Length: 273
Image 1: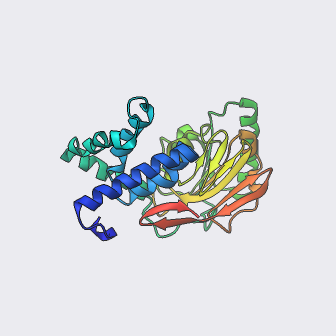
Image 2: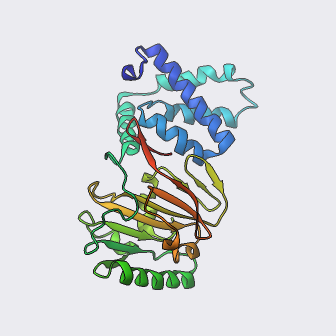
Image 3: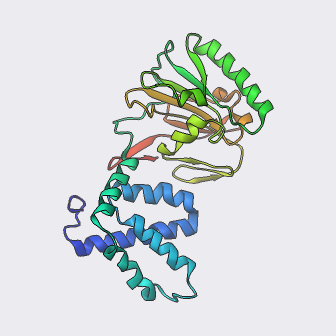
């Protein structure tokens, strides 16, 4: 806190409360997902560790307005959070911070930037809801491999989760829930793709978006990963038709560029520009 110009405990408490309230206001106005992505992650990453229990307490206030008619009335309850925190809680919260400070690299690669075409591993999904569309995606992935990565290997998401992929660049195809490897690691990336929206530094509402993004291999920060995903499995088929490569991520719609952007690091936390 001193390094961020908050030199004493009194002002540190005040700043935590202000930021926790801001997070909950953002959740009310923009939704929980955007508040988490754009507010909570950033504050936790900056080591405002007490916003986590403060936000939990503020949810009690939101759910019991018939009991607490004003914020002033609830304030003693909010302050009680500090009395109930022990040394273990503090250590756990400090460890929790590191989740939002990864990957610890200087830059995020663009999609397919400098990939080793002989050792890259391509990961296909096994859990897409539409099995017929999943098979069409498999056919596309085979053609993609034959054209661009003929010496590379295709594995399923289930196989990928069991393999040591730390020595490989990775290309992942599938929807966020249809590909189990993607489902496990997508939350490391500072954006959200849900059923009815995509969230970067703003919210794009709709259910037919596509996303191509570069990132770091979650198993080795010195290796790269490219993700081809969409809200629906049909959108992943032929997704490479969307122009990409000049920026960290591209949001597509109907195979046309809808938004391009880069990731920027703020106090060790990666965010979308």
